[in-house]
Structures are given as structure tokens and as C-alpha cells.
Image 1 (cartoon, rainbow, N blue to C red):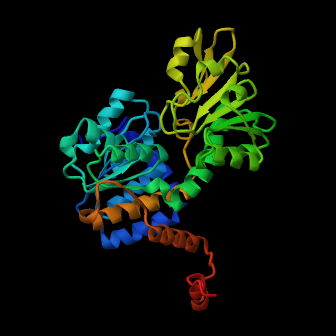
Image 2 (cartoon, rainbow, N blue to C red):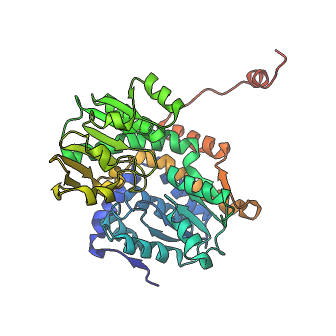
Length: 416
């Protein structure tokens, strides 16, 4: 088994530079790295990790290694790996298997290489490690104590496995922790999606009509930032409660069928397949821009678009133009993959400081409690959330009020 498989080891200096930059802006992980260097809580424990292979993820890997973990790492999207960052991790002696644009077969091979070291703990983003362990390499699952899942889509897959009774080990729902989804999904996605769209199109957002498909925490963040940039926002939804929320947040709400002919920029955040299809595209304005913010490349139906289009050409880096029947062009960003990471740098460092702190504490929880955990999806404890939030506030120099004993009694009594 190779220790690493990266595009070019000579890119390592650029990768180290990126990692050092985010480290200086991730105070929670810096503190954990200091503690782990002294305490070594993961000593000798094998961890397999599949998260977008960029600088914040690389620093997470370094923190886990400082804690004594024997780490194998790969990406979680064929376009999200930054080759200089992967080279830097290889230079640190970490088992890393990740190359930008390697293709689906190469990506799958890297997932298998990452798992082949018979890990004790899985850290997943989208569920590809867990999926392979269950579908194709169940022989490697016996050593796994449990794992942690980073994203909404991955947790949906895990809950489906739990319902069918096939989940082989406990998985902590990291995405559902307050210190993850309230900030990462909303503020992280909200900022990073527009960072990617603006840097790749070099177009103004103010004055345009933006259609946001899905109003979960990611959709809320995308819509909020679009409005702040001066766009008019339309939301499409299948959930009536979320639709009411979108309306009361000041956005228009309508079906995709009706929104298709109005929008200038479309961003999907549903976690569902075929949210935008060629039938919708036929109604769109010439040169409408489509981007996906969901984990998998199924929300914009690129496969059907390829079959429907009369012509296609790269109109700008990370943007493919499709000439549709009737002569209009539709522009799809990043092959319909996760636009903020496949065509940019992903979430801000300060946001991932929170998210990856949840991953680390969840991995510690698995290590300490796996013998007593059922083979199901488990919520991250409120104690972990509270501890991380307190550490984050402390890093900002912020103090908050505490209940007096009298107030605590009042809140826990019905006799007043």
C-alpha cells in the first residue's frame, strides 16, 4: 500500500503556506493541537477521513496527527482537492490519497486506499467512506468502532441505512450539532457560494434575480447573502413551513416551473436529484447561470443536459456553456458539483474552526464510548456543543451572563 498518492510532491511549499494561513485563523483547532501534543488522546488509533482536501481539512488532519492518530485521508469530491495542499500533507508523513480532477474511478480508488488501513474511526463528508464499507468492502468494517458525518446529505444516507437495519457501526450526526449547521451551513455556505460565483463569473449580483432552490440552513444562508448583495430573491420549496419562513424573510416563493423564466442566477441547495432539468432550462433566459450548493452533482441534471444540448463549450474557467434547442445558452458552473469548493476555497476558516472542532470532539466520544453505543445515527451531545461554543467565545474575548442559583431554581420549577 502506497503511503500517499498526490499529483506533485513539489507543490508542498505552496500547500504549507495555505495551511499556515488557516491555522492562524482557527483558534479552536490551535488550542486543541496544543492540548493533543501534550495528551496524545488518539495514540495508535487509526482514523480514515474523507473531507474536501483543502487547507482547513489539512489542518484538521495535522491536529489529529498531533493527538497520536494514524491517519489516512482523501477528498470527498473529484474537483475539490487542492493538489498543493495534498502534497503538503504527504510531506507531513500523512497517508493521503487525493488528486484534483482524477475522475470517478480514481476517486473511488482513493476512497478504497484510504479505508484499506482498517480504521477504528471514520470521519466522513457525504457518506462515501461509509457507503463503500457497506457496499463493496464489508471485510474492512469489522475494525471500525464508529464514525462522524459532516454534512446533511451524508446523514440522510445514514438514516436510510439505519431504517433498513444495515448500519454496521454507530455514526455521530456532526452536521446536526448546533455548532455545525447553524454556522457552517448558513454563514459558511452563504458566503462561500457567492464568493465562488462572483470570482468565477466576474459579474455583479446587485440588480439580478436569484433563484434559491431549497430553504434549509444552506438555502437560508445563500438567500440571505444574495439579498445583502442587492439581488431580488425567489425561493422554491417543497416544505410548506419553510416556504412560509422564506416569505416572511422577505423573499418571493413560487414553483421552479414559474421561477425558471424569471431568474438570472439559480443556486440549488435541496440535497435532491433533478431539482433543475432541461425542461426548466428551456424556459430560462439566455445565458442564465446555474450553480449547485448541494453535496452531490445530481441537483442540476447535467447528464440530461448533455444529451439535450446542441452544443457545449467552456465559456470561462469552471463554467460550461450549453446551447439548448431554440438557440439559448445555459451556463453551468463546476460541472454541477459543489460550487463553493469545486470552484473556490470553500467555507471561511473561522467557520470550519467550529465545524472541525465538532468532528474532533465527536471522534473522541466514539473513542471513549464505542463499546456502549448502538449501531445507529447518534446526535452530538449538548455538552459537546456547549463546550465548543464556550471555547469559541473565549477565543474572541467574549464573556456572557450566567444564571444565578435563584434563576436556575425558577426556570426548573412550576410552583412560582
